[in-house]
Length: 109
Image 1 (cartoon, rainbow, N blue to C red):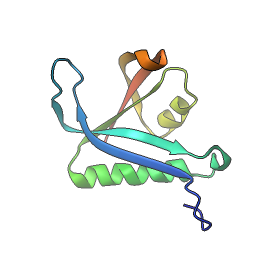
Image 2: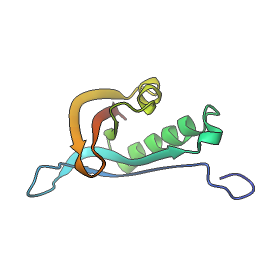
Image 3: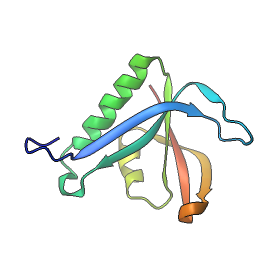
């Protein structure tokens, strides 16, 4: 948050789960980065890197040994995640509501 109170980014994580219908099961030892955003006015200032690094420390401190996230297949963010040592793991999904292909990334904590 800036001194004036404007939020410039956020990251949050939760327990990773399978998405195999008809049930959802936790994936032991794996966290899921549910959201990662930084304000475009503040890109390239290290804010997103610092937030993600802090989230990774918190996930590890919580007992997770690895993490995953999903991002749009054509997103510029993919370069950012790869620069932070996240690796695409080959999983792909189609988000029907958004007509958008997404890809999964993982990282050991």
